[in-house]
Length: 603
View 1 (tube, helix red, strand yellow):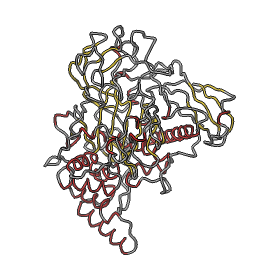
View 2: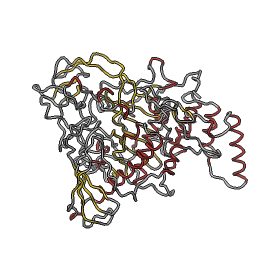
View 3: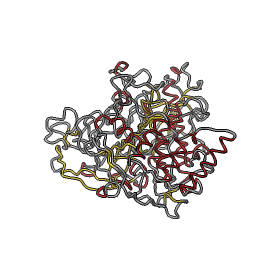
């Protein structure tokens, strides 16, 4: 990797940037992990240890003391609470800035990959098995059925036949739903390996959180449906209240207490006698619920509070066989069901069934509402060893624009041999997308791109690898003269360094330290991307797009990185916010009720 130093310029100023490609070069350590320059300017986006402490400790309204930190009994991983979506503000309480959106993505990822089997301390010998009950695979979330029409219960409320939180990853699709094929196309992504037999397919799964499910059920049953996902605390409270009263959420004493804290007058700020009355009522309600202090709450019991804070969330995950990664201790692992294939024909694979395998998480899309943003915030997370970056620019602590460029020759990445490319070669296609290849016989087939090709990461030539590259690092077209892109790059790099440092500082073996926020996109005014304002020839397709305008995940939009999220996730009109979600329209309004006899929570 080569870093070029350019002459000193005012921070994030456009003036003079055109003359910025100058002078000295030096070489950094060659490594197969995404590089975060240590001299990056931290003035625009950072995460202090004191702010990180607010991520691991929850202050409940009106309750003295805080919940947390809570550590998983097996791994010792700390539970990260979700950001407060209904009160989405900047650190100083004003309107959120760009950094706050990126922080939202980082905190949401850490929450989703926290576990709900809580303890009070880090175990003496932490282990990270593929059976850990992560939030996204627990009762906090629904998983989608194989045809993406049903929301299915998970975790303690799931079907006994689900076999230990396993997610049946989708193997076929009829439109743009997720499967083995890529989003926006039918490309099939395989990891780098000497032979196709040693390579792993990349698998995809989709989940939504409980509030998304509650809202879907209520809205599709309403005579006059809402046109946006919930964006206020009042709207979330209404959905949670309905769910508690109709058997879709727990209505235990603790659940009612938490609902009261967030969703009644007790939540309102008070002073004088009103504050004393509020404190007395909270104390009375806690006694009725059998809770002596904030620290007595367990993570599963806190679901109503988490529902309130996280608002409406949609999630896509990407996975590979754990046997195909270099060091599986650096990955979040889960035992999941995936399709199996007959690979005897080198250019036409046939699905034969499914089996449970240990999988490693390589990517995650997180989409969710926050106050004032019905279009939702779209963030993406990647593993550090997925693929190298193309050339990008950032600002150092002296206000100097620097260039980071490849190739990182000899590095061993999951999807690349270290060669940085301008376009990514496609060597396999799925048969379940729009206009499938003519060689397909079943929607579940995988076929080669050409008659003389073979399926695999390299096609016919082991030297001509597909070499996945992050074509637009940090989600924007790169130019040393583009002050916006340089600013966004700088903020995301700085934040990732701090997040990783804080996570690693709590637990040296925490696998979450090996993932990073690749970017996030939202609209500057909270408007809905819609057809009337789309530019079909550009990935920067909506005039109010901001943040990572060309956001793409190398494991999900591998072959379609020239268009950002809102190039596909837009609505027919400016008033229909539900149109940004591809799965909402196809999901049944029916959601699972919790069992009549609620499973006993682990203490």
